[in-house]
Amino acid sequence: MCHVNILHLIEGAKQAKGLTVIIDVFRAFSLECYLYGMGVKQIRPVGTIEEAFSLRQRIPNSILIGERHGKKCDGFDYGNSPSTVSKEDVAGKTIIHTTSAGTQGIVNAVCASEIITGSLVNAKAVAEYIIARQPQTVSLVCMGNEGVKPAPEDELCAEYIKSLLEGREFSEMDQRVSSLKYHGGEHFFDKSRQDIFPEADFYMCVSCNKFPFVIRIEKDGTGFAAIREDVCGVLSDSPIRLP
Image 1 (spheres, one colour):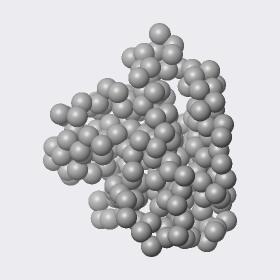
Image 2 (image 1 turned 90 degrees about the vertical axis):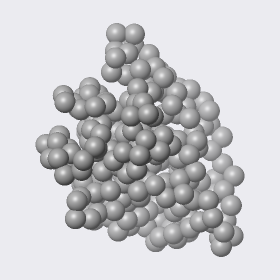
Image 3 (image 1 turned 180 degrees about the horizontal axis):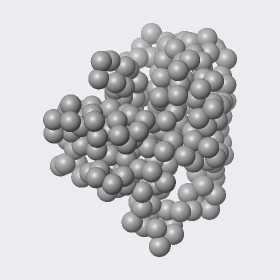
């Protein structure tokens, strides 16, 4: 159907072309799916903490969510943890989001013709969206740890999406997800770090195909906007059905 490239880290985001999927499983783009599931109005990804504070002044009643080195940014409402966000606090609000890896991929993907985000929680929806769009080139960018070190969970997500696009069975999914407890996600099980990496986050982020939508990146006069787009109905005219 198309040429699929798997790229890596911030340098990979800079090289990405065509329809580009910026992947961050632990935790940025899993969190954004959960935020839309909680009924947020809109998500605004930004590259820096300074941009986040500046944007909050322009968007009344907005919520700051973000991290550096995993820890909640000083002065922010929430860190990058889906299990700690209160639905009552965020429903109907605009979220301003900055992270060490995921949002950095967005701002660096300057050669992409289109950008969506990806994680295990909406991987099949991502593949369905790509099939419906029928691009010539797809770039799957694994953002890794802070955009500079590969992360097994992002590699797994990219391999899984690619297998769906190519119509190949991915029979080892359960085993690979389980192995993330000991290789990639072990920090979620460190009792001394539960304030930063709650164990519940791990299970929320590996809940495969929980959400039937993608998050598409647009840019307007305010900056980047991460827009929820449901894929139900997108494949109505496509002869391809994913398993």
